Length: 265
Image (cartoon, rainbow, N blue to C red; front, side, top):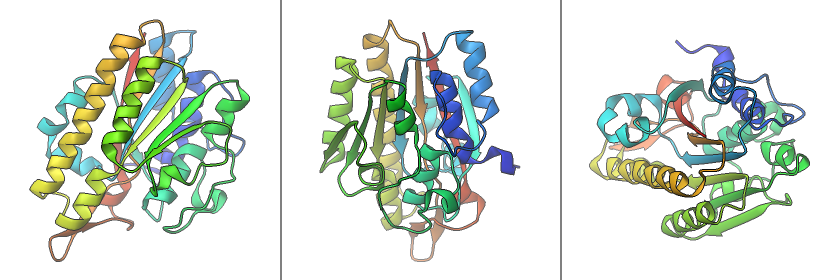
């Protein structure tokens, strides 16, 4: 059973520790599983590239029920890290906690709203350290909105296809130290048809294939770098009446997520 110390709020400081930079000012203590594994993997060195693929709403119970669908991710990654996300378990709240390392009462998003987060974040910490972060997301979605107004690069597009094509281009250009890519297709589809519907599972396959493509491109283009690559979601989801899906409740299906990480170099 996950405990309080497995909170998603521990992720941000752990990622900063892997990059060798100071954590955001209000971030909770780093998740030790991720941070300690990075130390073992890289020794005294640090990562100089971080690529975070952020699919939406893929809970631990989905990953455990469909291991064959997740195999292109799990076969490429060497570390699985369980987290308990924050409440309410909805996208802007959870990603605000993900990237600031704080609970909702600190970063200020406590419902399904998308204001710009003013709390110190991974992106602010990276910029202070002289790193170059980039956000790649579909327009109107949380990650295209809540971390705006930083001196970083934003690539916001109408479609998932354009988002992922830009992410591939950025990998090949190798000009950014941190790249975050958001895909909300599984979440959108499971809301309409249910988390286990054929339609939703097709979108899950698309997420997995996108991650595999990004991982393989990193192999081809980032050989000089020490890279941390993550398949890292915000929250889970559950079935509701009418064959639909939802999330936002204090239940295991919504709260329990498992991130998958690969360390290269």
